[in-house]
Amino acid sequence: MKPPTLFETSRLYLRPPTLEDAAAIFNQYAQDTEVTKYMTWRPHASMQTTREFLERCLAVWENETTFPWIIIQKGDQQIMGMVDLRIKAFKAEVGYVLARAYWGQGFITEAAKVVVEWALAQPDIYRVWAVCDVDNLASARVLEKIGMQREGLSRRHILHPNISEAPRDCWCYAKVK
Image (tube, rainbow, N blue to C red):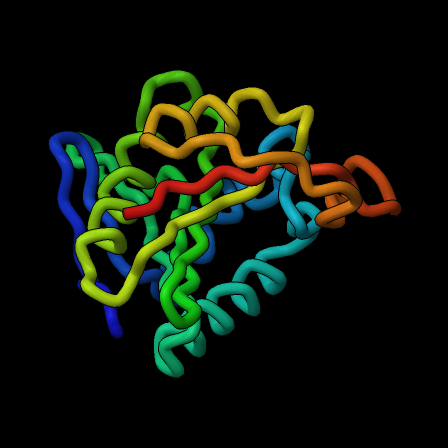
């Protein structure tokens, strides 16, 4: 099952990344230590790291294992962040990142919601889920706003290397049909 390459909301476009997005991604958020605090990857030290990341994004679209989209604001056409969907059998996991300049304005909620709604509209998808670090209150709020319910605590679930070298506890959220 392959999702659409383009989503449109009232304020945003979501489209697959290209190698030409490297500079904007690097400058907007990939090297920002505050943005990457709760990510599973370290801040990008160079544009080369961002290009390598984008090459992986292109490869996963091609082999249909993960579907990343760049989030673009309609007004100024600026790259704001990314959202992705990882489909496995009857369920899909969603993840996202947003440049700090756009925090607190509902953009990531808008972007994640359209992707989650598409996934749950598919006949073979019954569950869309996500995890967030127990200390990442903003991300937990986004997941609640898109209609996900907190299911429980996954102890020592994921490594957030920008916080700790040990796996961290995460809240698990899901929306089911």
